[in-house]
Length: 205
Image: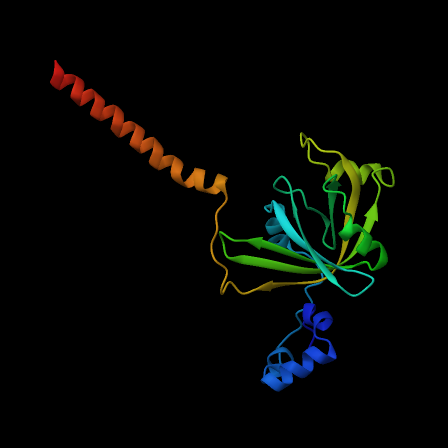
């Protein structure tokens, strides 16, 4: 049976390790296929809610490189059920991921939701475009009001994806998430302080 993501990841050496550890049957005895070759509403919503992801590429010398990419929430766009893209803004100008992708278009994306303890991993083929190559695409992936210069568009063609279990993901929360959670408490404290101040003023009278 097909497992989509592992059909790519499980090379002969990986399968040899699985067999030696007794886990090979776990991935060959499914009741149905797990192709995971098209994004559903679940993946689309998850991707749209992210403000960062990790991008892995491989150099011509065989060395892997993992880069953290961040931006406004939803900066990684789902164009259709098999295509992602984002506007690549000027950064430190090392261009390691870009150079790797031009030599080998295989890439892996890792998307994390630490608060919900969820992670989505995606195998893709990566394409590097200039904004002038496809002005319509450039416009659709550019975040309005984001003050940075777009140097290129990075487009990903989905090969397979999979979800990891939540075990060992330590919950972490962004400053915005903490602020939303704490705001009702701050409002309640403010109301109690006002009430206390009123009681003290009455006692003084």
